[in-house]
Length: 499
Ligand SMILES: Nc1nc2c(ncn2[C@@H]2O[C@H](COP(=O)(O)OP(=O)(O)OP(=O)(O)O)[C@@H](O)[C@H]2O)c(=O)[nH]1
Ligand SMILES: [Mg+2]
Image (cartoon, rainbow, N blue to C red):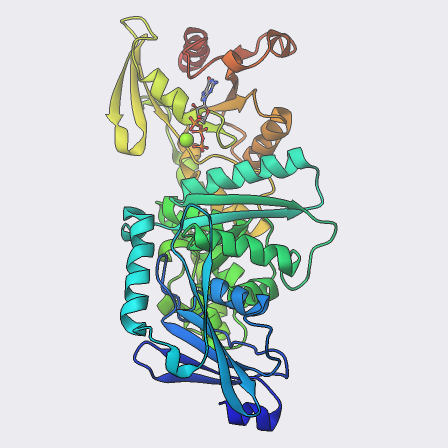
């Protein structure tokens, strides 16, 4: 390699697997070398790539440069080795490998050797024990197969807005069953067309995340197909954006046939513009977290087949919509259990309210709440001679991407059967009016305006009295957590059952 390098005046490199087989041969420039896209071979947290990069340096004395070390860390290579070339012969050797998490926060270790003969590392067993240590450091978290994510927000907005958005993304991530290992928000003036934020900063964020055992990076900003591809090539992490995360949550929650179709439709539409180029790009894009997307196998289909599938799903939806309309027309409300559906912005306290209400103690004896089916969050209220079923729903969020709205609404299909919609507003949210409007907007779009809505203002235990006084006089104010105002709430629900 030293000889060839000298002859062609370029850096030459090889990627070698653990069996010692050369998997790639690379030819670089005079002063740099480019590692090909290895994103198809991802090996998970605590695991290294199974490939070491050995390459020549014509400009000697520089040792391993920052590009070399960045590649080592971002691609999780087994090691990065540079051979100084002097007069066509190998001289000094530099070897770097990653480190398991440690107290000093040191990410890699560099060794130098006088010549090839003095390298005495039994490589296979060395890498094996390094990997074992890394897996041990992340404990059982790795073995349970869960995803660990770094969240990244980059925008020109002021700090408070960035932080709010970040918190919302964190809630979304948790709701998708993802553990958040790091969150970074960055103020930028302009979005970079290739990788959203500056390369230096991005690399730093990703290296830090990998060090913490991340398996996934989630961007709060929606990425273009180009950005997803570029960033995926750069780092040994799954790369997804906010839209994909939301799609994932919907995929998990959709129960009805319509809901499932809507979600698949939204996923395919999201995917279509991203199905360009080589095969590896497709598997990389395979619907988000933990394979709840359209699935690896289906992704091997081409654009034409995706379009066909979209068409057929859309036809199915039309049929379902027609049938549902008829069903609703025929629906008889009398004699049935009175149904209340909780809606509200995400984190408003819907589930807490449900739990508190079923805690029985808050109400007098004749209004006992009993769990009907805890799995589906349905509860049963016996009181005033009337049975009530209350159900929880998926939280609303702002800036719902257009393509997702239909999917989102279909996860709320049970609202259509509700006799009363109970809208929970979180008064501690910095922009609760905005949250409230976002929810009302979606409700309007759902064309269920014949169902009465009762709004209740939650978390009064955590806001100033002044804020409460500013609400309309007849507003229902509660604290789902402390149990304040629930009697009044129930009284306001019950009159609507007396018809
Ligand atoms: N201080 C205070 N906190 C509350 C109250 N009600 C709920 N919370 C808190 O608000 C957070 C969100 O509550 P959840 O009940 O999970 O909210 P949710 O509307 O079901 O949220 P999603 O299901 O994510 O849409 C939790 O940390 C609750 O403890 C309240 O009355 N007062
Ligand atoms: Mg909830």
